Image (cartoon, rainbow, N blue to C red):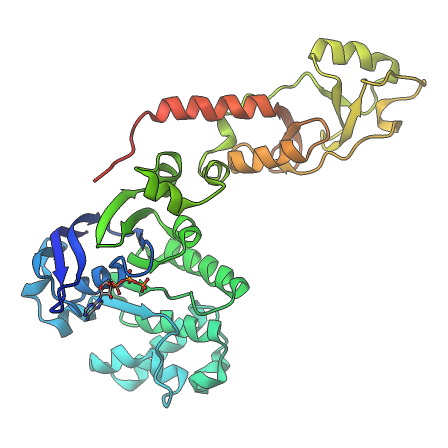
Length: 378
Ligand SMILES: Nc1ncnc2c1ncn2[C@@H]1O[C@H](COP(=O)(O)OP(=O)(O)OP(=O)(O)O)[C@@H](O)[C@H]1O
């Protein structure tokens, strides 16, 4: 765990970059520092590896005041990744990745073997080993930067806007690879960004800072979205907060209705009575394996002798899996469905029931009252 204990940083010109910061950064998780330009994120990050020394207060790494550890020893335990990778232009990719192992006195063979392993781990081909940084795209260089920081297997990684110099598509794939890598490695990561969407996507914990170096709120993303501490945080979170927070709520609590689900062999003439019993004009027609075929509406009256399987059906659209998907997926399924109902399926795509938009609204309200007032404010 990394602890900031009432840490203040005032620069010689009088600028207070960080002001009495208290923060507990959990081991093995991603903690994101986010906030507008100049709010003290980078300064905070650099006080962990002593690139910046606090004016007052203490930074503790696993209980040890970092000021009692000499910087080279400290930095061996702490990987550091910066924007635009910061690679050495005249060294090959392999030697760039092996930088820290070389400094640690590993023999060349072992250092290079480790670098090759990491090259693969961050999704780059072995053939890149001999290239120079200028022969790689921005996104590829950024991956090398991550590999270099991981080379000595430090338990802590500091990442300062590592993905912000690449285009949005590359950025998205770097973020996804980064999350995959972290799921294997469980490093203690402190990640700086000014992009709230990136913070919400990556952070297990998010520290929102305001200009003047003060902590505005420190919470997991779902709590931040549900209960912003004040108008500044609310404003910083931006529009769609309500929709975005649904991504963190599981769809497993939704009540699923069976009554409107009917087999394809059902006679058309029986449809109105079934709809009446179900209390819904829309029936979801399923095949023999319970896979969805489409929606049938009795609203405009029913004519003909065939079965529902032979009738013209409206597309069932997007489905959701209650165990795996979020309420956001369920809501999207309901909004896109002609019936206004979301179709729930199991892992084999078989229908397990349907949920209405009203069910989704109720589930959100129930989760809200369950979670109570857990939001923390410093
Ligand atoms: N060496 C320095 N001397 C004086 N002031 C500094 C120094 N370094 C940073 N600052 C000031 O401290 C404040 C915090 O800077 P910092 O770089 O930590 O912010 P940041 O949140 O990382 O900003 P950005 O998102 O723009 O990178 C800013 O007002 C900045 O101008």
